[in-house]
Image 1 (cartoon, rainbow, N blue to C red):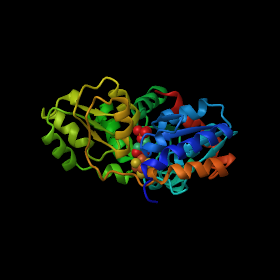
Image 2: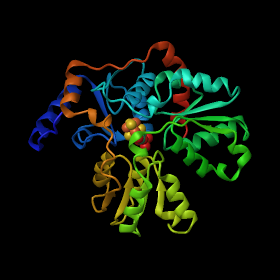
Image 3: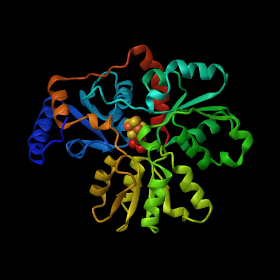
Image 4: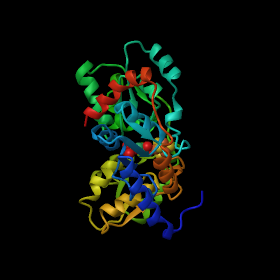
Amino acid sequence: MPALAAEQIPALQDEVRALAQQRNALVLAHNYQLPEVQDVADYVGDSLGLARKAADSDSEVIAFCGVHFMAETASVLCPDRTVLLPSLAAGCSLADSITAGQLRHWRATHPGAIAVMYVNTSAEVKAETDYCCTSSNAVAVVEHVWREHGGDTEILFGPDMWLGAFVERETGLRDDPRRRGRFHIWDGECHVHAGIRESDLEIAHARYPEADLLIHPECASGDWAAEKVEAGELRAEQVRFLSTGGMLKYAETAGPGPVIVATETGMLHPLRKRAPQTEFVEVNSAAVCQYMKAITLPGLRDSLRDLVHEIRVPAEIAERARLPIERMVAIS
Ligand code: 13P
Ligand code: SF4
């Protein structure tokens, strides 16, 4: 769909607001959504924040401007509400990288292991999972598992291998080969964050050597930055591995910048809104998630008008997926 002309936006936003009021709908938007969609939402945030907002709301309808697994998560947490996803094209390559059957098979080969799955998975996968996590609490969830089940517990972590590598770095598993051998990582990845290369970070860093680097843990290039810190080529406080919500928190106290941002480019909009005085530089302008961008303002308007597309997780799956999601929501 061609981009909207600037003069079309205000009238469409008015329509969305009027329909949302009429439907008693809460409009939620992820930080990667198109700017005009973010600007009309009641709440904009990261996966964890959006799940919490959905759970806390009492509106009859939740219009989810994000991707399919996020709407499913909201539906599991709010089974009595109508959850709408404005476009069924809003999938996720990372969520597609593991099926429930694959997880069942993985578990069968590691009896007794605890499965910790990133929230970027289908509800069917969550139904086979012990704990869900997001990028903002993955480390806390894994440490919680060790506290609850013992520090030697075998863990199956998936589906994002780069988030898994981040957890290994942050928890010290890298320096503990025995325990590391009991932390298994699925080999899935997000095509957008995998496309952010070490060379992108090197070029940006060479251009702005003093700039802080905000890196989403899904980025394949996270190891590059961690090694540079270890080698003393980057200062530890210069490199921040953050969820999209964590990046916004960073922006609250940011100086004039420049600040290098390694994640999906939609993130630049909420960052610039939060800290207009700071210069944020995207590390790779091609890092665009076409699934997130499948949600448009006309699509959101039609969704609220026609109550489409309703996302409802079958009760039997929702029942099994609820506990790991609730555990995720409870752990910070
Ligand atoms: P956050 O949880 O950081 O918002 O990330 C969600 C996501 O899909 C990243 O690609
Ligand atoms: Fe999925 Fe990657 Fe898009 Fe996030 S950016 S929704 S992980 S495909």
